[in-house]
Amino acid sequence: MHRAIEIPSADGVIDAHIHTPDNATGLLPGVVLFTDIGGLRPCYHEKAQTIADGGYAVLMPNIYYRDSVGRVVPEGRSFRDEDVREILLGYAGKLTPEAQARDFEALLAGIDDETVFADGPLGVTGYCMTGGFALRMAASHPDRIAAAAGFHSARLADTENPDSPVHIVHSIRGQVYLGHADRDELMPPEQVGAMDQALATAGVHFTTELYKGAAHGYTATDAPSYDATADARHYRQLFRLLADALG
Image (tube, rainbow, N blue to C red; front, side, top):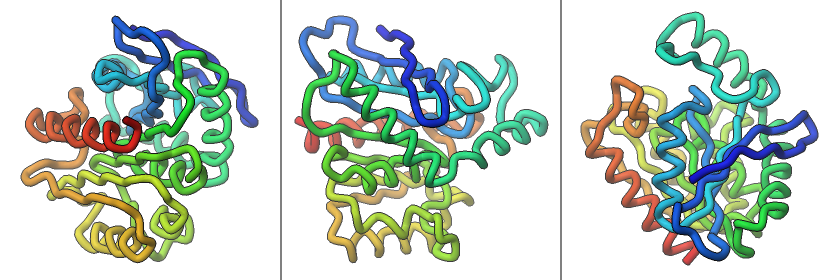
């Protein structure tokens, strides 16, 4: 089951959704789910519900709330359409590290205001560009984020970019899991290696895996690159991480 909520932030009102198991009783460990660049849409509600059914309360915010409420991409359209891509890239360009930091504060306050979430550590997972969001949230709130995961993440370790997440992972105290597509042009081998090195140097408890044969977007059921085998593996590894870190 899920319900829509509104969370006040410094930049407006975040429209978000909370997914919980249908048979939930009592408080549940919390997980923040950031959508990929396509934003809120049915396949991500399905993803959030699948995670929730594992025994969690999942908060899924609209990352584009500054520009649009609810679903951004019309049914039947996608990021692959040039006009849609232009809009999404424009929205995504506003999600600077500073904007993300303000959103993280608002989301944590929203979780604290909702009675379904148990006290204690939280998990966060991101996809595509928001794999970096998950790492950044874990780094900026190490006292609250015990598990951070990224799947088919994009550009996590652009060492020439001062805003790259690779520069802040030393602040992470929680566990990290990164599931990379081995044919992902948005996360080339040199960036995978640079991120692994940064995490290892920082002493972060982390696991990195390459999903053989999978392409960027392998968890998105509405994308041509969807890979059912890789998607199932993503859930197994995510649930393993959450169980270990959150209990």
